[in-house]
Length: 205
Image 1 (spheres, rainbow, N blue to C red):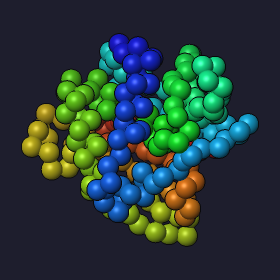
Image 2: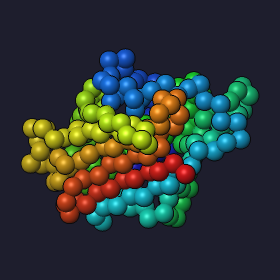
Image 3: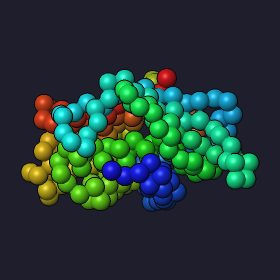
Image 4: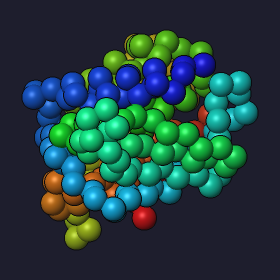
């Protein structure tokens, strides 16, 4: 199992590496939301995770993810702290720079990668790269009265689809505010059909 500070380092690397060559949908999802100035405000996402009972996969019936501002004791400068709460435990991930990208978004993508690896037995490196490529370059975006919605299907045309155990149908959906600097309102990673019945869902309260 990856140690918490290792996960934080991986997320930090992804937060700082969003490329300039993203497509329109990727640009919307990875819009610049920093520098963050949360002060006493805490952004809280309701989190639910569904899927089959498999070693290494953690379903969550009633969890949350919080993004808060803290003070780095080493230099007394503000940093961002992610707090994950599942049904029976809580852990801190970070810290992250206030001038960087969105740690919640990157946490969501990384956890989706790890869930898929656990449920399929596939390589997390391969899965991560395909998801990054899809979000950074592909996808489509639609507009309605509630804002913008970006959708991506990372494995729809994957040459290894027959080994994906249902994840070839995975769709990543992001509901965005009209203001690109505001936090993402909703994130969802869901497969179609009963197999594997995977659904990671986060909604900003």
